[in-house]
Length: 236
Image 1 (tube, rainbow, N blue to C red):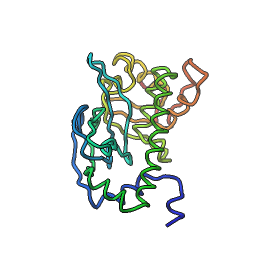
Image 2: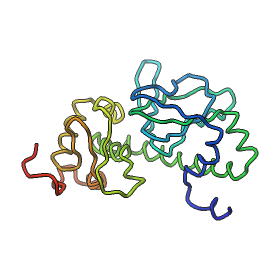
Image 3: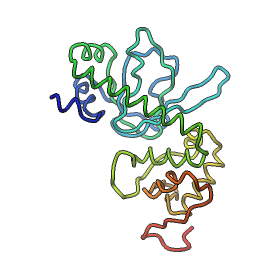
Image 4: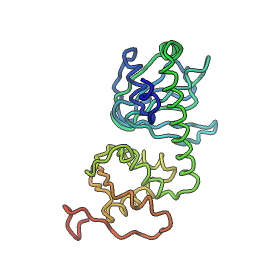
Protein backbone atom coordinates (compact mmCIF):
# COMPACT_ATOMS: atom_id res chain seq x y z
CA UNK A 1 0.00 0.00 0.00
CA UNK A 2 2.83 2.41 0.78
CA UNK A 3 4.34 2.03 -2.66
CA UNK A 4 0.98 2.70 -4.29
CA UNK A 5 0.42 5.91 -2.38
CA UNK A 6 3.91 7.20 -3.10
CA UNK A 7 3.77 6.83 -6.87
CA UNK A 8 2.87 9.59 -9.34
CA UNK A 9 -0.70 10.78 -8.81
CA UNK A 10 -3.37 9.00 -10.83
CA UNK A 11 -6.93 10.43 -10.57
CA UNK A 12 -8.32 6.92 -11.10
CA UNK A 13 -6.94 5.87 -7.70
CA UNK A 14 -9.06 8.50 -5.97
CA UNK A 15 -12.13 7.78 -8.10
CA UNK A 16 -12.01 4.07 -7.28
CA UNK A 17 -12.14 4.94 -3.57
CA UNK A 18 -15.23 7.09 -4.07
CA UNK A 19 -17.21 5.48 -6.90
CA UNK A 20 -19.16 3.03 -4.71
CA UNK A 21 -20.83 6.04 -3.09
CA UNK A 22 -21.45 7.89 -6.36
CA UNK A 23 -24.15 8.18 -9.02
CA UNK A 24 -23.69 8.77 -12.75
CA UNK A 25 -25.65 11.01 -15.12
CA UNK A 26 -25.57 11.64 -18.88
CA UNK A 27 -25.32 15.25 -20.06
CA UNK A 28 -26.03 16.60 -23.52
CA UNK A 29 -23.73 18.94 -25.42
CA UNK A 30 -23.95 22.46 -23.91
CA UNK A 31 -25.98 21.23 -20.93
CA UNK A 32 -25.05 22.85 -17.61
CA UNK A 33 -23.90 20.54 -14.82
CA UNK A 34 -24.11 23.38 -12.32
CA UNK A 35 -24.23 27.19 -12.51
CA UNK A 36 -22.13 29.88 -10.93
CA UNK A 37 -23.73 30.89 -7.64
CA UNK A 38 -25.43 27.52 -7.03
CA UNK A 39 -25.07 25.87 -3.65
CA UNK A 40 -22.02 23.59 -3.72
CA UNK A 41 -23.21 20.24 -2.38
CA UNK A 42 -21.31 17.67 -4.45
CA UNK A 43 -18.07 16.87 -6.25
CA UNK A 44 -17.93 15.48 -9.79
CA UNK A 45 -15.77 13.21 -11.95
CA UNK A 46 -15.58 13.12 -15.76
CA UNK A 47 -16.01 9.54 -16.95
CA UNK A 48 -16.44 10.38 -20.65
CA UNK A 49 -16.52 13.58 -22.68
CA UNK A 50 -15.23 17.07 -22.01
CA UNK A 51 -16.39 19.83 -19.68
CA UNK A 52 -15.58 23.54 -19.54
CA UNK A 53 -15.55 25.76 -16.46
CA UNK A 54 -16.52 29.38 -17.08
CA UNK A 55 -16.86 32.47 -14.92
CA UNK A 56 -19.07 35.48 -15.61
CA UNK A 57 -18.53 38.98 -14.29
CA UNK A 58 -21.28 41.30 -13.09
CA UNK A 59 -21.28 43.09 -16.45
CA UNK A 60 -21.82 39.81 -18.30
CA UNK A 61 -18.29 39.20 -19.55
CA UNK A 62 -17.43 35.47 -19.66
CA UNK A 63 -14.13 33.60 -19.56
CA UNK A 64 -13.22 29.92 -19.75
CA UNK A 65 -10.93 29.05 -16.84
CA UNK A 66 -10.48 25.30 -17.39
CA UNK A 67 -11.12 22.46 -19.80
CA UNK A 68 -11.74 19.08 -18.15
CA UNK A 69 -11.67 15.64 -19.71
CA UNK A 70 -11.76 11.97 -18.73
CA UNK A 71 -10.17 11.44 -15.32
CA UNK A 72 -10.71 14.97 -14.01
CA UNK A 73 -12.53 15.87 -10.80
CA UNK A 74 -14.27 19.22 -10.39
CA UNK A 75 -16.52 20.99 -7.93
CA UNK A 76 -14.18 20.23 -5.03
CA UNK A 77 -14.96 23.68 -3.59
CA UNK A 78 -18.03 22.01 -2.07
CA UNK A 79 -15.81 20.75 0.76
CA UNK A 80 -15.75 24.25 2.26
CA UNK A 81 -18.62 24.99 4.65
CA UNK A 82 -21.66 26.71 3.09
CA UNK A 83 -19.82 27.30 -0.18
CA UNK A 84 -21.28 28.45 -3.49
CA UNK A 85 -20.14 27.59 -7.00
CA UNK A 86 -17.59 30.11 -8.25
CA UNK A 87 -17.91 28.94 -11.86
CA UNK A 88 -20.33 27.28 -14.26
CA UNK A 89 -19.61 23.72 -15.44
CA UNK A 90 -20.95 22.87 -18.91
CA UNK A 91 -20.64 19.78 -21.10
CA UNK A 92 -19.08 20.63 -24.47
CA UNK A 93 -20.04 17.27 -25.93
CA UNK A 94 -22.17 14.34 -24.68
CA UNK A 95 -20.69 13.41 -21.28
CA UNK A 96 -21.01 10.86 -18.51
CA UNK A 97 -20.45 12.58 -15.17
CA UNK A 98 -20.27 10.92 -11.76
CA UNK A 99 -21.63 12.85 -8.78
CA UNK A 100 -20.43 12.35 -5.19
CA UNK A 101 -22.28 14.05 -2.34
CA UNK A 102 -20.29 16.47 -0.20
CA UNK A 103 -21.11 14.64 3.06
CA UNK A 104 -19.97 11.32 1.58
CA UNK A 105 -16.65 12.70 0.34
CA UNK A 106 -15.92 14.39 3.69
CA UNK A 107 -16.76 11.23 5.62
CA UNK A 108 -14.48 9.05 3.48
CA UNK A 109 -11.62 11.56 3.70
CA UNK A 110 -11.93 11.63 7.50
CA UNK A 111 -12.20 7.86 7.87
CA UNK A 112 -9.53 6.80 5.37
CA UNK A 113 -6.11 8.52 5.61
CA UNK A 114 -5.08 6.97 2.29
CA UNK A 115 -7.95 8.78 0.56
CA UNK A 116 -6.99 12.05 2.28
CA UNK A 117 -3.45 11.70 0.88
CA UNK A 118 -4.80 10.99 -2.59
CA UNK A 119 -7.06 14.03 -2.39
CA UNK A 120 -4.16 16.31 -1.39
CA UNK A 121 -2.16 14.94 -4.33
CA UNK A 122 -5.12 15.66 -6.58
CA UNK A 123 -5.40 19.27 -5.39
CA UNK A 124 -1.69 19.85 -6.08
CA UNK A 125 -2.11 18.26 -9.50
CA UNK A 126 -5.03 20.57 -10.32
CA UNK A 127 -3.16 23.66 -9.11
CA UNK A 128 -0.36 22.84 -11.52
CA UNK A 129 -2.84 22.40 -14.38
CA UNK A 130 -4.55 25.73 -13.67
CA UNK A 131 -1.19 27.48 -13.54
CA UNK A 132 -0.26 26.09 -16.96
CA UNK A 133 -3.56 27.27 -18.42
CA UNK A 134 -3.16 30.71 -16.84
CA UNK A 135 0.34 31.11 -18.31
CA UNK A 136 -0.96 29.90 -21.68
CA UNK A 137 -3.74 32.50 -21.62
CA UNK A 138 -1.32 35.35 -20.84
CA UNK A 139 1.69 34.61 -23.03
CA UNK A 140 0.50 32.57 -26.03
CA UNK A 141 -1.21 33.82 -29.17
CA UNK A 142 -4.81 32.89 -29.93
CA UNK A 143 -3.56 30.39 -32.51
CA UNK A 144 -1.27 28.69 -29.99
CA UNK A 145 -4.08 28.59 -27.43
CA UNK A 146 -6.38 26.96 -29.98
CA UNK A 147 -3.74 24.31 -30.76
CA UNK A 148 -3.30 23.55 -27.05
CA UNK A 149 -7.05 23.31 -26.48
CA UNK A 150 -7.51 20.93 -29.42
CA UNK A 151 -4.72 18.69 -28.10
CA UNK A 152 -6.22 18.74 -24.59
CA UNK A 153 -9.69 17.88 -25.89
CA UNK A 154 -8.21 15.07 -27.96
CA UNK A 155 -6.40 13.72 -24.90
CA UNK A 156 -2.99 13.61 -26.57
CA UNK A 157 -1.37 14.67 -23.33
CA UNK A 158 -2.54 11.46 -21.62
CA UNK A 159 -2.39 8.74 -24.27
CA UNK A 160 0.20 7.73 -26.83
CA UNK A 161 -1.96 6.45 -29.67
CA UNK A 162 -0.83 8.00 -32.98
CA UNK A 163 -4.27 7.77 -34.57
CA UNK A 164 -6.28 11.00 -35.11
CA UNK A 165 -8.96 11.67 -32.49
CA UNK A 166 -12.52 12.62 -33.47
CA UNK A 167 -13.98 15.61 -31.60
CA UNK A 168 -17.52 16.94 -31.46
CA UNK A 169 -17.07 20.62 -30.69
CA UNK A 170 -18.26 23.69 -32.60
CA UNK A 171 -16.11 26.62 -33.71
CA UNK A 172 -18.30 28.86 -31.56
CA UNK A 173 -17.41 26.84 -28.47
CA UNK A 174 -13.72 26.81 -29.42
CA UNK A 175 -13.79 30.60 -29.83
CA UNK A 176 -15.22 30.98 -26.35
CA UNK A 177 -12.52 28.72 -24.90
CA UNK A 178 -9.70 30.51 -26.72
CA UNK A 179 -11.02 33.97 -25.96
CA UNK A 180 -11.30 35.18 -29.55
CA UNK A 181 -13.87 35.46 -32.35
CA UNK A 182 -15.39 32.61 -34.33
CA UNK A 183 -13.98 34.08 -37.56
CA UNK A 184 -10.44 33.94 -36.14
CA UNK A 185 -10.94 30.33 -35.04
CA UNK A 186 -12.21 29.49 -38.54
CA UNK A 187 -9.09 31.08 -40.04
CA UNK A 188 -6.77 29.11 -37.72
CA UNK A 189 -8.66 25.87 -38.30
CA UNK A 190 -8.35 26.24 -42.07
CA UNK A 191 -4.61 26.86 -41.67
CA UNK A 192 -4.21 23.80 -39.44
CA UNK A 193 -6.07 21.73 -42.02
CA UNK A 194 -3.85 22.91 -44.88
CA UNK A 195 -0.80 22.04 -42.78
CA UNK A 196 -2.11 18.51 -42.19
CA UNK A 197 -2.62 18.93 -38.42
CA UNK A 198 -6.39 18.38 -38.50
CA UNK A 199 -9.17 17.18 -40.78
CA UNK A 200 -12.23 19.40 -40.62
CA UNK A 201 -15.07 18.53 -42.98
CA UNK A 202 -18.23 18.46 -40.87
CA UNK A 203 -16.44 16.47 -38.17
CA UNK A 204 -13.13 17.34 -36.55
CA UNK A 205 -10.16 14.99 -36.37
CA UNK A 206 -7.03 16.11 -34.52
CA UNK A 207 -3.65 14.62 -35.46
CA UNK A 208 -0.75 14.27 -33.06
CA UNK A 209 1.38 16.32 -35.48
CA UNK A 210 -0.39 19.46 -34.17
CA UNK A 211 2.03 19.23 -31.24
CA UNK A 212 4.86 20.28 -33.54
CA UNK A 213 3.13 23.62 -34.05
CA UNK A 214 2.46 24.08 -30.34
CA UNK A 215 6.02 23.23 -29.31
CA UNK A 216 7.64 25.55 -31.86
CA UNK A 217 7.45 28.68 -29.73
CA UNK A 218 9.83 30.79 -31.84
CA UNK A 219 8.34 30.37 -35.28
CA UNK A 220 5.35 32.64 -35.88
CA UNK A 221 5.27 31.88 -39.63
CA UNK A 222 3.41 28.92 -41.14
CA UNK A 223 5.30 25.70 -40.48
CA UNK A 224 6.19 23.20 -43.18
CA UNK A 225 3.01 21.20 -43.84
CA UNK A 226 2.87 17.72 -42.33
CA UNK A 227 0.52 15.75 -44.57
CA UNK A 228 -0.63 12.30 -43.35
CA UNK A 229 0.18 9.49 -45.79
CA UNK A 230 -3.48 8.82 -46.52
CA UNK A 231 -4.04 12.34 -47.82
CA UNK A 232 -3.33 13.35 -51.41
CA UNK A 233 -1.61 16.55 -52.65
CA UNK A 234 -3.97 19.33 -53.58
CA UNK A 235 -6.69 18.26 -51.17
CA UNK A 236 -8.86 21.15 -50.05
